[in-house]
Structures are given as C-alpha cells and as structure tokens.
Length: 437
Ligand code: NAD
Image (tube, rainbow, N blue to C red; front, side, top):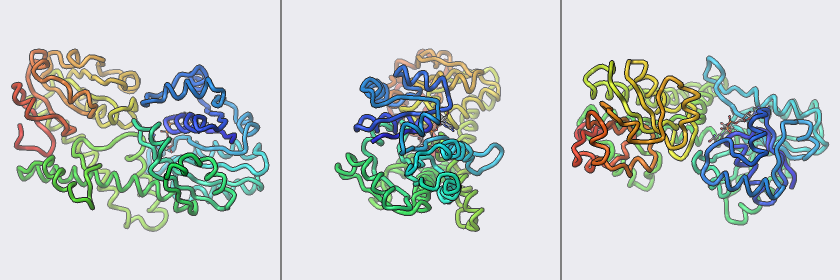
C-alpha cells in the first residue's frame, strides 16, 4: 500500500522504514530540511540498533523516499501516519499538540477523497474526536483514526517489527480494515490487535506509560525507605519481583526515568484529567513525578557527601549521558541533569557516553565529553554511574583504579557488581543500599 509518514523523528523514521521493509510504498515527510536531506542520502538522524542497515536497504529498494512537501504527501497517498512530536507546553504541564494540529490542518484541504489520517503521536484523550470534527468541515470524505505507538527507544526497530500489541481507535469498519491490511504481516505472526474507539486507543497509550512510570517510582520510593532503615533495595526488588503478579521488569531502582515520553506523558495525563474533572483521581501521578525527580537531587546530594561536602575543585567522572542505554536521546536525561547540576555546584565534570556525546554537547556545551572511559575517569575524585549501558558492567575496577584520584564510585543505576568493585579497593555507594559502601 502507498502511505506517508508525517514526522521522521524517533517514531516516524522507524515506522517509515519498517513499513517499507514489509513491502509498502512509503514517503517520509518532515519540515526539517536537514533531516530530510540526510535521510534521502540514507543516513539515520538518530542512533537505533539496526536502523542504519534497514534505512539503507529500504531507500535502495525504492520503496522509501523522503520529502519536505505536504502537497507531495497528499498527492502521493490516501493514507497518512502522523508521527510528529507532542512535547510539554512551554511553561505548563499539558501536551503541546500544535504540531499534530499543524500536520493535520496542513494536509486537510489537499486530501484526496477517501483519505485516512492515522495518528501515532501520544495525545490527550479526545484529540481524535476534536480533529475529526475539524476534518469533516474541510475534507468531508476523509477520516481520522488513532493508532498509538508503543515502541521503546533502543529497541525501536525490533518493537515495530513485532509489537506486543497493535491498538487502533477507529470510527469505521473501513478504517479498521485498512489498518488490518497494513499490519497484516504482524497479525499473521500472532501480534494481538485491538480495534476500539479513538478515546480508548488514546487512553491505552497514556495509561501504559502512567503504569510503567508508577512502577519505577514505587521502587524508588522503596529505595528511600531502604536508605532510612538500612535495608537493601536491590535484594528487595529481586524478591518482590519474584511474585509473578508483580514481575521484575520496571522494578529497577535508581536514578529514575527521563526521556521524551514518561515525564511529559504523565504530566499531560494529569493535566488532561484535571480538564475532564477527574484530576483528584489521577493526582497520584504528581507524586510519581516528584519521587522521580527527587532521585536526581538525592544523587547530587549523595555525590556531594562522597566528595567531602563540597564540589569545589572536585573532578567528577560521569558514565552515561543518554536518558537510557542503547539510545543517543538526551531529552530530559536524568544523567545529564545530574551532571549539569554538579557542574553548577563547582565541580569539573567529564562525561562519557558511547552514543549520546554529540547530542549532549549540543544541550550542555559547558560539560566536558569523551568517548573513552579511562579518560573520563582521569584524576576523578568520584565516578558516577548514571546510565546503565551494558558496557559499564564490563569495566575492570582493577584497571580503572590507578586512573582515578580516589577509588569512589556512586552506582546511581544499581546495576554494577558491588563485590567486584569493592574487592578491587573501591568504595561503591548506591541509592537504596546504605550498607554496601
Ligand atoms: P521527535 O521529536 O523525535 O520527532 C518529531 C518529528 O516531527 C521531528 O523531526 C519534527 O521536525 C517533525 N515535525 C514536526 N511538525 C511537523 C509537521 N507539521 N510536518 C512534518 N513533520 C513535522 O518525536 P518522537 O520521539 O518521534 O515522538 C513522536 C510522537 O510519538 C510523540 O507524540 C511521542 O510522545 C510519541 N512516542 C514517542 C516514543 C519514543 O520513544 N520516542 C515512543 C512512543 C510514542
């Protein structure tokens, strides 16, 4: 089938490439000319495992092309996926859906009769209904559906090829049939398909993110209780997660969540709940948010204690800049937030990350960056482990020992092997583990 993908960021570029890979004819559209030029040349604008090869293959096949023209988009196809960003409104908590509105409004007058717009962006419940009303006025023979995206950065290609579920919010059998046809290879391989009304589809997405964020903040609240009682949150999480009703995933204590989804999505959900008169019901999300951001402050405070109460003239090595491993995304990165705060408090901060250094440098040019772990740690008074890249677990504490000024490491992700660092003469501290240091 012919389709466009409007917005070629983390979600759009992966969706476009995966759709082309399963045989569709795809035009990726973005207002960012530089991005479109890079994509046309076959260069992925982001780091995602497997994306470079996928892009190269699909662009070469001729099934994936890119453009900056909305008119070309509406001429090219009658099916349009909208994957533009929905950040927080400046100075507020609600979702800023002006890019979604602009994408739909830009296409509406030019749509071919019988067109279907399918939103994938994360939006406040009620958005599809609002846009459908606008569309009826301008393009009465077209319709809009919502098909929220659940991919995880770092696994975006694999998640798009085999999602855990496909949810579509539709107003007609025709829209449902179109979406079933698009996703046929996934449905044949057994991916569950939920066809529902648009409001439910929109809510499935924000409910999923709210639940996951709550699970992370729950275990981080337990980490604080552990710090107050001498208990160990890693053992606690392992034992609690053993209960199959609870499970281990997203029960990892530490510095908490960041990125371009969970923080802004729970705030937007709470703000929308307020508008809908169910603000009190969802008020716990404010607590989830507060517990989460508190972990960043706790990490800064613990680091300051570990270097003797002041960061002045201290050298701090930071391992990790991306908001999560296997990604170059630094949007609302807890690691960079902590690194920047420590620098503001007087420390010299050197940051290592395997993929996110370029993005980090653009956002925080005042920090120092390196692609070499020992260089980051040279003469450090303290090493901070802030993003759980698997390669940090492979570091040899014995080899890193002579590089630093003081063998102290703060494991803010609670994933390093404490015993091996300690046996190499390091003091390892961690959130929620008061007894191990
Ligand atoms: P992004 O910021 O990486 O990409 C958005 C792209 O849209 C940008 O390239 C921007 O230039 C483009 N754009 C903006 N307005 C446009 C317009 N009018 N026409 C064409 N292009 C336009 O955002 P993202 O991370 O890909 O997220 C997109 C949406 O998907 C958001 O709603 C987000 O919440 C949701 N989502 C993101 C993820 C994720 O892991 N990143 C996962 C699931 C859902």
